[in-house]
View 1: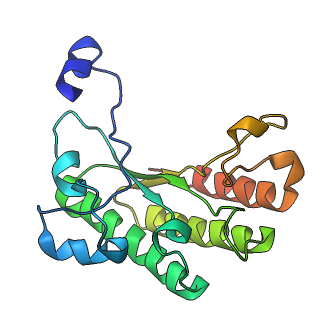
View 2: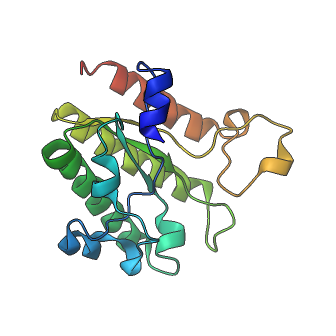
Length: 182
């Protein structure tokens, strides 16, 4: 499919949109997957396709490590980002973007403060790896919405006008990333 799309538009950037689970290409990396999950994907193999321009990962420790402590989930996210950053830099030699992450309001024990801490923590890792050079290119929260889109709410929605603390964190990260020259 990537070859076909590139035949239509060579300038169109392509990515896969995977969570980032490791597969059989590097079996020892499977231990980084949350709770041994694979879902039939292989982060390395799929992103080595020549026509794929950049790699993507998601980070949903609240789902993948449901019932685990915030500390366990935080440590997992740091390993997850570090591992994919390193593989994108050394094996894939392609940019990496964390294209989905968030914390669901449907989770037991959810609080706005916990979500803000999580987002800020993820942004700290993204910024640190981007400053170190290599391949970390940015991130996207899941999902920014406008008021009145209730039918699309999945627990991860962020409505900036209703969440000024989260809006400030996103703005601060945007300004920080803008200052990095890739």
